[in-house]
Image (cartoon, rainbow, N blue to C red; front, side):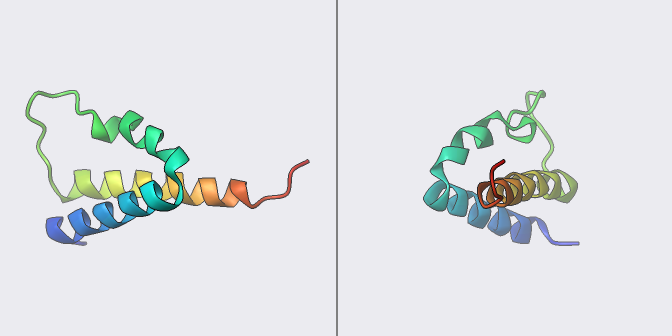
Amino acid sequence: MKTEKELDTAILKITMKIREQYPELSKYISEMPDTIPNMENPKMNTKTLQGYYDSLDVLLKDYIKNQHSPTK
């Protein structure tokens, strides 16, 4: 499992990629449940960070896949 620092770096990298190459997806980042904690002081740990990274990764991969798929 990655460390918190490695996950922070990975999250920053994928977020920058989305904002630079796919700015139309940026609005979805702020709407993701992991970016809007339902607690006043959420505990950030590797599990939480990994979940957030995974959700960004799925968002990006699904968008790229659907963007290049032939339309019916």
